[in-house]
Length: 87
Image (tube, rainbow, N blue to C red):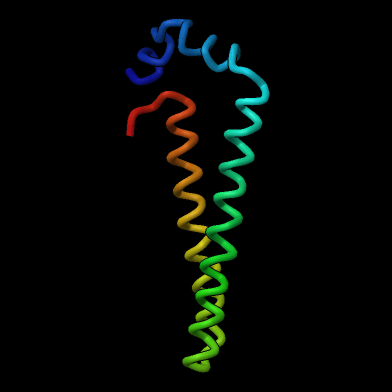
């Protein structure tokens, strides 16, 4: 039934994505990429800081993984908004 519902969508939603300004699309995707990179750097730095304080190297790895998860979730939310899905 979901495949049938997707086929019945009006064409205006698909054409909306094709008619966007290329500079606006570039700005949105570069902003999303920057957000991902900043999340990774900040959480890695926090993990490194706590690793130095507590003398456990694995906290740096945990910080990096947490940064990827937080940045990736923000990227996924942005992609949903761009594609027109409601959260």
